[in-house]
Amino acid sequence: MAGLVALEAPTDRVWLLLIGAGLGIALYHAAFGFTAGWRTLVTNQRSGGMRAQMLLLAIATVLFVPVLGFAESFGLTHISGTLAPVGVSLVIGSFLFGFGMQLGGGCGSGTLFTVGAGNVRMVVTLVTFIGGSVVGTMHLPWWLEQPGIDPINLTAHLGVVTTLFLQLSAIGLLAWGFGWLERRRHGTIDPVIFARPERSMGATLVRGGWPLLWGAIALAVLNLATLLVAGYPWGITFAFGLWGAKMLQAIGVDMAQWSFWTWDYPALALQDSVLVNVVSVMDFGLILGAMLAAGLAGRFNRASRKPLPARSLLAAVIGGLSMGYGARLGFGCNIGAMFSGIASTSLHGWIWFVCAFGGSAVGIRLRPWFGLGQ
Image 1 (cartoon, rainbow, N blue to C red):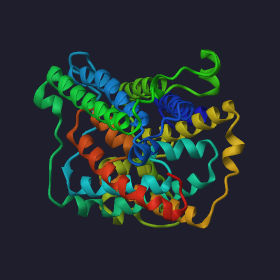
Image 2 (image 1 turned 90 degrees about the vertical axis):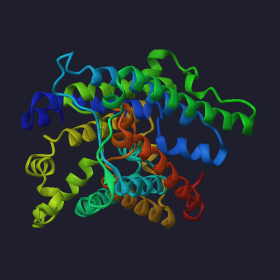
Image 3 (image 1 turned 135 degrees about the vertical axis):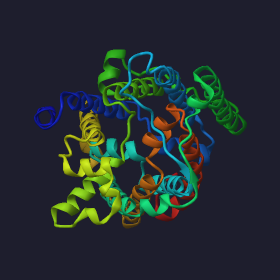
């Protein structure tokens, strides 16, 4: 795969493919899923997954804010954070995404790394995710005409030190609140984030079973590497719309009839090979990394033999469509909008988190009807 990318694209795409593979390995070996962490907090008040996500955001904040805030001083004039407007499109899109991730069985990153690990149901989620993303690109211009405000970069308004203090305080308060809920329900807090590996460190690194702490550190550092190499942070879902648009274009559909695909960046991406687009290359790397990790852990074949009950399949379709459409309206998924957005101190990242969590709560309530466990 790296050889194909090297033939089609600049050298930095090869590095981004490898970074994507590293992200896939980290997601799989640490079982660092956003969807399950949200669901476990709602249904059982266990907060380990949510506290791990707050740790991830805290590490990324410490890494990103000084780099972005002093980029010009460091000579990093080619980099910029993930910023997006705040408005109706963001609220509706993030709510739909949160709803879909509970029925689909995974978020943006979760869908890719479980597909890479051989989960057949998640292939259905991915296919419909792509379909929903394409429809979202068709409708996005209309949604952007609805009420909203321009992107708000907290660092630009408050400065590096103040933003670091406020954002870390907010993350810490949330982590404390999640822990308080767990302690109130169970009497203690599960120390899962700092759990000791069952094997030696070397064996754990290769075969998996990483503590969530390792996963949080790896994801934050690799996102910073993405920022430095690509010029902007990690994202996932733009590639899904691109793949779908290229499929339609291949069968003769004129994508220029939708204004989204005439905008500079989408038009260039549609014209180029998928091995040139940064997000697409990293998604391929993530899938390959998860495949490698599943193989090293000896779990690839077992994942691929799971049955597909009809209602579970229907949930995957609904979830994938909702996530695809919602990601386009909401300017990304849990990675591009929430993780990278909050790390970039964009207000939209925080609003995405709140609205997506609300949608997720609705999706969680519907899971039993589809025969999905809590």
